[in-house]
Length: 113
Image 1 (cartoon, helix red, strand yellow):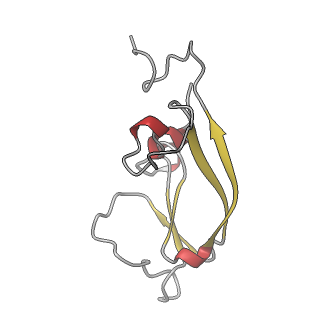
Image 2 (cartoon, helix red, strand yellow):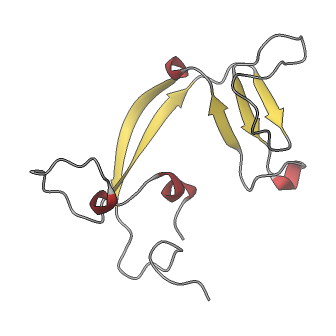
């Protein structure tokens, strides 16, 4: 089963901005693993499309990040989903390159029955 990271990546062959003279396996995917400073975290138990900046915390000051709380803890998402609001809060640490195995049956490679 593929990870949630597949929702945020695409095959090299499908990337519209790839350089013309670059030879990379067409099924290659890349994921960036980053060190992230979350600071004061706001726990969101429901979706809020109106947020454009961090919500107010308990002490009435802006939080540094937000976590979407999973359903099994009273929220509305499948997994903890973190949102940061300032680019400086994340520092890339690694680039992970991967491909799905030929026998993969995830929703991107195979069909779900």
